Length: 132
Length: 92
Image 1 (cartoon, each protein chain N blue to C red):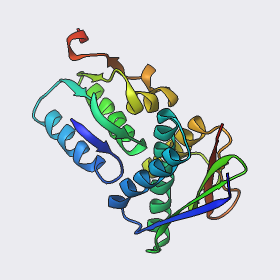
Image 2 (image 1 turned 45 degrees about the horizontal axis):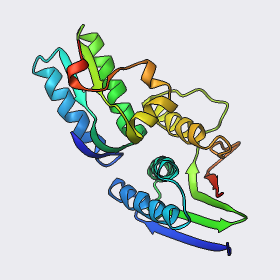
Image 3 (image 1 turned 90 degrees about the vertical axis):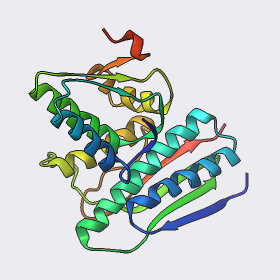
Image 4 (image 1 turned 90 degrees about the horizontal axis):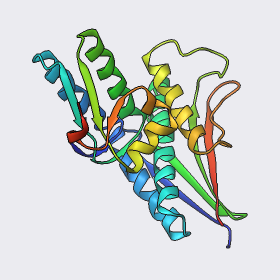
């Protein structure tokens, strides 16, 4: 498979999370992912976009949410920049942080190698699917 | 209910469930069979509803036999927290 990079950019509002799911679903099917893998990617992308929207809202940043997909090295790699803001060693203190932690837990449960923690500051969420 | 539950649509679900409880419903059943997608935003609503039901000494049953919603409940371990049934007929 040739290396290919795809980017979706949507406004940072909840109504566009479904567009991100449609995007990753189409890409995943295009590269031959199973329907179960497509479902898992859609959940993980939805969680990452939700996290990115929350991070922007907290920071007063109205910039768009981007979903970057890299098709190379036999993988479908997804990165959502600026999606994590919370430090990993701090307990979830309120409902919003619990929701963030649940998002990260779901991504890690579906993609155990996912990068969903930030040692400091704002960071991307990244995960990948190995293509057979 | 049907469709997709995410950060955009979860508030409507939450509102409907709170209305049902405020109207005196104590035994609540949520049929998720036609729900095509649910992420942590929807899961959060279900957890909040379970808490409210428990505060009222009521009960909450979910109907969900397959598909991506059941998978999310399973990967989060919440299938052990909620009472989940394959069909409404199975609810005692």
